[in-house]
Amino acid sequence: MICVPSGVTNVERRAVILAAKNAGAGEAMVIEEPMAAAIGAGLPIESPGGNMVVDIGGGTTDIAVISLGGIVASASIRVGGNRLDEAIIRHIRNTYNLMIGDPTAEEIKIKIGSAYPLAQELRMEVRGRDMVAGLPRTVEVTSEEIRDALSEPVRLIAEKLCTVLEETPPELSSDIIERGITLTGGGALLRGLDRLLYSVTEIPVRVAENSMDCVAVGTGRALESIDKIREAGAVSDL
Ligand SMILES: Nc1ncnc2c1ncn2[C@@H]1O[C@H](COP(=O)(O)OP(=O)(O)OP(=O)(O)O)[C@@H](O)[C@H]1O
Ligand SMILES: [Mg+2]
Image (tube, rainbow, N blue to C red):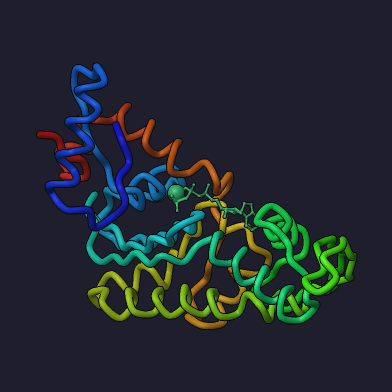
């Protein structure tokens, strides 16, 4: 069972399955990532009601509404953790004339990054290379300024979420309002992202337990209940 991003073409699907078979798999199937994420998060995907999952990875954010084991509405944007890291690098460069690398940017994001005002704002020391003198220099950055730097990519995620909600059939929207939206993926761990998305959509938002593992766990579970899943059309093979 192999995960593919939502919205891949049939040719791409086939290519993945053939690659798995060429690598020695007797049988190979693909499942769309948001579907795997929803299963991993424990959502009742086979129920007739609507389930909404937002999987925020490193490269992409995948948003899907799932009902009766199938994806009803979905979107994928190339905005995820990497874009947040890039926004931090740009901010530090423009504000302090300081160059930092990807690992430092990710560290800042994880240590003090946020999408919504914090009860206790944070700060940390950041070391980089001065762009003029070329020498190492240390500055102190605050969670407020990092939130500001992250606001653009975060807004893009929120906007896409609203688009998918608008495309969702009304009878499923009412389920989603009741059940809430589930966030998965490493990006779901950004402080206050749930609150920010709640403030935009006015729908309850929760971060899945072990959000970073949902896709992998869900892929495994899909394999365990393959007959049921196959019947619902959530997976495809050749
Ligand atoms: N505590 C945290 N706060 C914010 N972001 C985090 C946190 N922990 C991990 N991340 C980010 O989560 C991202 C990785 O998430 P995940 O493992 O879900 O991605 P992926 O599945 O590899 O990517 P994709 O789904 O785009 O292929 C990275 O950008 C990482 O920086
Ligand atoms: Mg992922």
